[in-house]
Structures are given as C-alpha cells and as structure tokens.
Picture 1 (cartoon, rainbow, N blue to C red):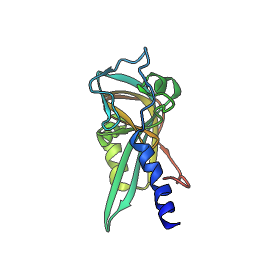
Picture 2 (spheres, rainbow, N blue to C red):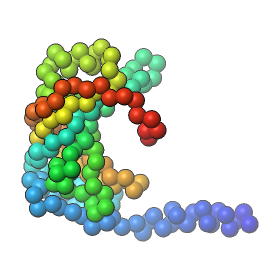
Picture 3 (cartoon, helix red, strand yellow):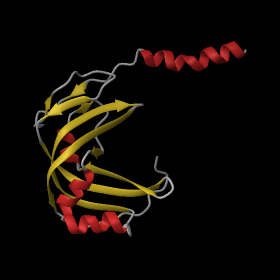
Picture 4 (cartoon, rainbow, N blue to C red):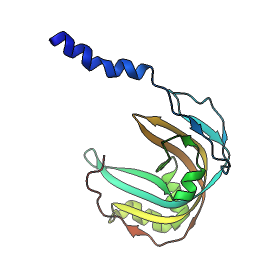
Length: 170
C-alpha cells in the first residue's frame, strides 16, 4: 500500500515532464517583436516598444528586521492586455517592472515619489496612466502567466489613490 501511494503521488511529476506550452499568441496590433526562442524553460523575450494603459501599482511591505521590500507593477486595461503577446488561455494581467521606482518618479515627479517611498504612510498606491514599455518578457510558470518590462515614458491620467489591504493575496 505504501509503494502504491508513492507511485501515485509521483505520477503528476511524471506527467509534467511531457507538459507542452499552449499555442503562442502574437496579436497583430502589437508593436513588439519576438527576440528569443519560444520554449518551455525560458521566458520569451521581445524587442521594441509597446504603449500600455492601466494602473501603476506600488506596494511596500516589511522585509527582515528593519527592511522594506518594494514591488511595482502595471495592471493593463483590457485593450492594452489584448495587444500583449501571451500564450493562449493565459492573458497577461500584471506586468512586473524592472524599473518601478523610476516609473513612479516619471509618473509623479521625483519629489512626490520620494515622499511616498520614504514616508510610507501609504502601503499601496495606484495611479492610472499610459506607459511606453520595452524589454518585455513573458512566460507561464505553475499554470500562471507572468510578464516583466521596463518603463520608458509615462503619462498620468489620475490622482494617486491609496489602495486598501487586499485580503487573501498570494
């Protein structure tokens, strides 16, 4: 019985070895061009620039004894997300930013961005706007799509909003 449980528990791992990516979707309206191999183990890289509208989210959380960890991302609106390359059934919902602090400063100006970053009276902020991104990468890991990019320019279309704590986040 113990051997049967071990074999049964290992079967999903064996099945994952044959896992194939779903079909790759390159929307015709996208300005991005594939710059790397489309495969299972590495993210797909793109060259070029794409304009994306949506929310810039900045979040600061305690890390370690006295540290603070920042994360910055763009949540694209539906038309922008539809222009982003992705795998079928795995549309891009969030783009992590490699230069998030700089993007926040572009969006708000250096002084206001530094106040938010240093004061931390808001743990999460949201600013709606339009962004030009580059160095776009995307993949699917553990059945979850992810994307990363660098922001080149921003245009703010709303005021800074404090975002309440999100219950049940992973």
